[in-house]
Each structure stands twice: as structure tokens, then as C-alpha cells.
Length: 168
Image 1 (cartoon, rainbow, N blue to C red):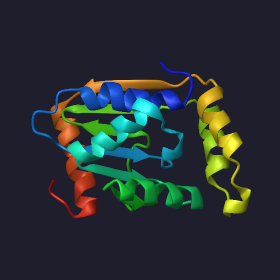
Image 2 (image 1 turned 60 degrees about the horizontal axis):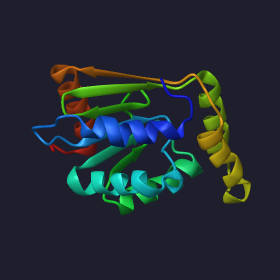
Image 3 (image 1 turned 30 degrees about the horizontal axis):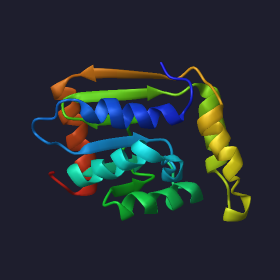
């Protein structure tokens, strides 16, 4: 369990990305919205950049809001491959890495807040204080479920990489 949304970045980078990955498969993120990299600081930001250097990072976001497009550019600058609003249907907020699949179950209140923050129609509406407050200060009943299942991980990875036209 975790309460503050910023904690998922720490879980993804310090726990999931540290799991064994002997075949050096890419790090795959399936999300409802793209995580704003501007909220990553210190060691977490360093581990985020290192993940892109050490592994291919593929991200599919179910949405293509202005905020998603803005955040996608930061991932692409790090070398990540991004697809916004794909045809492929997937479990949102899922990470596939090595033989592991992690599903992030955000509290419905958290989902509602992030949808509202992400659905701005112009950068004039962007409220950085509200975004940081939702990510760092607000507590929710969020959960991460990590399972080791090589077949499931490989099947999910293959489907996502097909969307990118890659066999990595």
C-alpha cells in the first residue's frame, strides 16, 4: 500500500526496476496519464534518467490530453518511446519488467483528481501548485500488486512492443 501518488515513482524506480531482469527486457509503462517528470527530484530523478540509459523504456498512455503531450516530450527527450491514446486496449497503470507485472490500483478519488488536472485545455489553466499538492500532499488508499509470471509478462510485453513496431 501507498498513500501519496509520488510514492509510485519511488516504488517503480527503487523496487520494481531493481527486480531481476536477466534477459534485459525493456521497462514498459501502461498508464492512464503520463506521469509529470517535473515532480521527480533528487535520487528519484537520477534513477529515472538511469532507467532510460540502462533499458529501453516504452510508455503507452490511454489519454492524449495537453498535459499528456507535454509530459510525453520529457520522456522522449530521455529516449523513451511513447504512444498516446493507442488502439491497443490494456490495463492502465501497469508496469512490465523482466518476469514481473505490477498493477497500480489508484484510489478512485485520486483518479478523479488526476483526470481533472490532466484535462486542461490550455497551459493558461495549468496550476502547478494544485498538481504538486495532489501528488505530494494528498493521501489516498492506493495499492501496488506485483506478481512474478514470466508468461504473462512476455505476452504483455510482446503486445505492447508490436504497437511500437519493435521486437526489443
